[in-house]
Image (cartoon, rainbow, N blue to C red):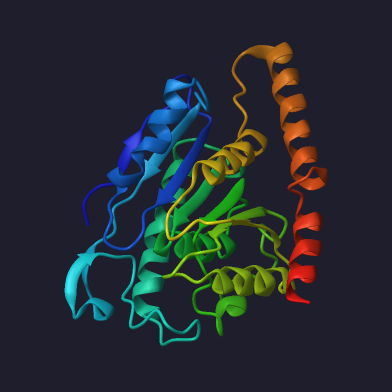
Length: 266
């Protein structure tokens, strides 16, 4: 496994985002997230880490070696056999990255773990089972891993039961089916997690600009820049409060989406 790609903070370092790529990709495939926010002077106190998965044989692809956080046997069944050993090894890798940021002086509550597809699945498991209180968890086109053991892997008295989880998923995803995202959000909510699932019309197995905008909104709430003094901080916190209100009560609120889903199902 090669070293993670890191984009340092522009100003003093007060927050860290760790983002995991999907199967067959590498950390550099997601560096545009940081580049875009740097260009727009967003999250100037945030360090971005894009880890690289090891090259492993992937059963689904005939045993071909490629970057992967764990082996995948099949993608046609949400309950398919899982590579538990590989999943837990990668979880250890993520937890060590978190530990390293804490050792460097970053508050765990200003550390965000996120990812796409395989990386999104790993971010859910790694974040939910982390012994440190995190600032937020993001899963784009992800799903729950080790479903039958998930609850038992969560530390007793978990500090992250009230940590917000943002899940984004396309309604046309042919690989990680939308239903898997819905089942994951429902299961995690049932276990007591605070999950906000957003479904993006027409989106296949990729990330959409609106989805990244929503991701950005969450980061403004979770890890606002702190450097520029009381007046700036007051503006930042007011903006964060407005974004939180818009997300919970505006046209795209969870409650309204849930009502639409119920109507659609009926």
